Image 1: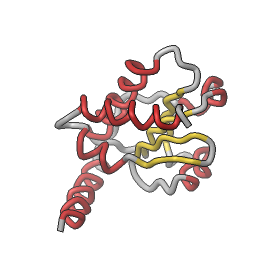
Image 2: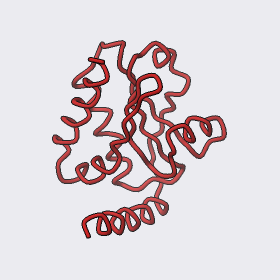
Image 3: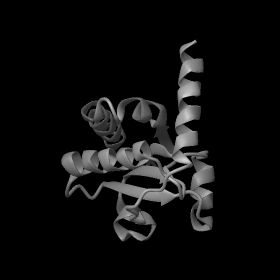
Image 4: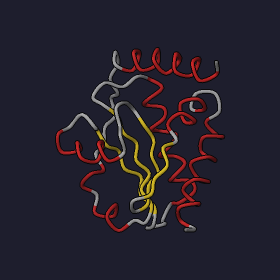
Length: 140
């Protein structure tokens, strides 16, 4: 029952996301430091983003800045999965809607479900989760 509720909430959320656009956009795909980083924290989004999606990006960026500023082993990368140039990366991580993925080499963890569950009501908890998962990849 819990899974059905989560799926229902995500479905409604995705429908809402497709109706709004985010005004800020930075494309990290050309960032040279991302190639040198050991851990990549990917925020995937489409062209249309809702308030929750934009907030997820902000909280994730803050988590990386607050916990890993100056650490060249960690890179936050914003990816518009609807762009042709990012198609292969989106396929690699099986991205179909706004997502948060932490990756190192061929290993990755998709924390999208937890992120959307926490972003509006517990952003501090989400920052802690992002830091914890990022550290687990750094320590491997």
